[in-house]
Image 1 (cartoon, helix red, strand yellow):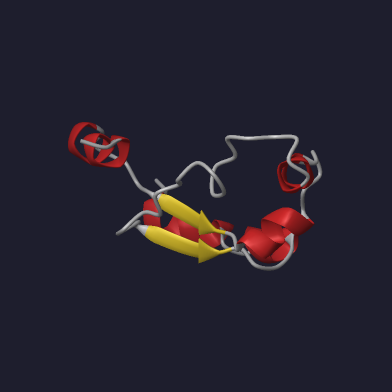
Image 2 (image 1 turned 30 degrees about the vertical axis):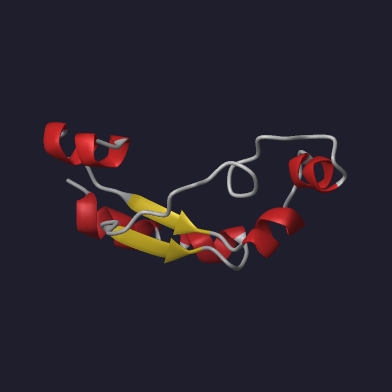
Length: 85
């Protein structure tokens, strides 16, 4: 079984939060230069490009991260409300 399935079966308070970031945003935010290196042919084995990243089928919470950090942080209260205590 995959890790997510194992986690759900064996960790009593396991919650899956998928922060869904479009590839264009990942490339734009590329502060370490990984995507540029990949696109230039200098780097291989980058998840989402030549290594498959399986998108969660049924996360407990999906957050679209297509804006800036401030917009992402607005979800903190939602996460605490759903999973906190």
